[in-house]
Amino acid sequence: MEEKDFEGTLVFEKLAEIGKIDAFLEAIDVDDFARAKSLMKHANIDSEIIQLVLQKMGDADGEH
Image (cartoon, rainbow, N blue to C red; front, side):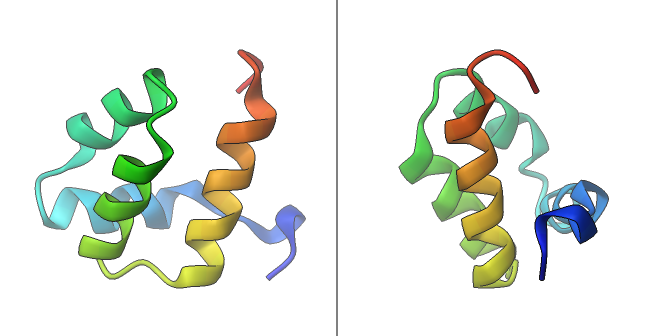
C-alpha cells in the first residue's frame, strides 16, 4: 500500500468494532505509539496499515 492510497476510515471502522476509538484517539493525542499499535493489532488491522499510521503519527508534529 502506498501512502496516497491510505484510507483512515478503515482504521476507525475496525476500532469501532471493538469499542476502542476513544482509547486510540487518546493514544494519538499523547503520542503513545505502543498503545496505538496495540489497539490496532487488537482490532486486527493489517501490519502494513499499522506501520503507516505510526509513521503518520510521527510525522504529524501537530499538522494532522
